[in-house]
Length: 233
Image 1 (cartoon, rainbow, N blue to C red):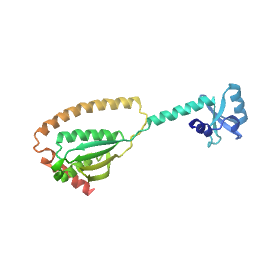
Image 2 (image 1 turned 135 degrees about the horizontal axis):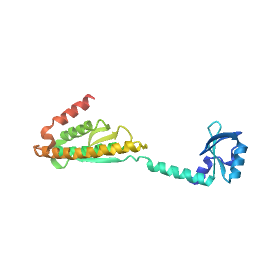
Image 3 (image 1 turned 180 degrees about the vertical axis):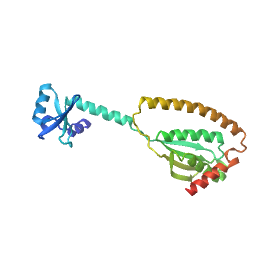
């Protein structure tokens, strides 16, 4: 069925009834009468395939029609594989998440968003921890604020049962573009350097987290600032 639809998409040989066509090949392009192009195709043992009917004059290629359809099918398959599939990644917090764990999950969320995925962050309230729902809201608002350069808020923190959800989407969809080898090499070098810096940074954060009494909200200044900033925006 798919092959039949593809065949109907192109006119070939005597189905091409315009007066003249532009025949393209590896050597360039030439405008000629359609009859001449058909004679050339017959002598070469191939087909005259119209690949761009809306051009003036229509553009055609001298190629075996079966081979042409195979190339088109292969090209469509490759394009489909290159398409970015947007997924929803989950980030889970507790109402008393400590700073080191927060930074760790923040880093993962940045990676998800840079890959073009959405992020659903939520705080899970277990038992009596539901009493700290305001802290959960402040945590999620801080999370959104820290990701404002790469994400936009699709849904502000909302309590549903024992979970409070925040939905984020990437500001820029990941694009499938070809990069020059030089640019790829430069980015790989930058990523390696950044990875080394992150290891040192996480070690520092781990040391700082040990000195924190009561987790993230023993010092709620950052969360309060995030809440204030988002309300102003």
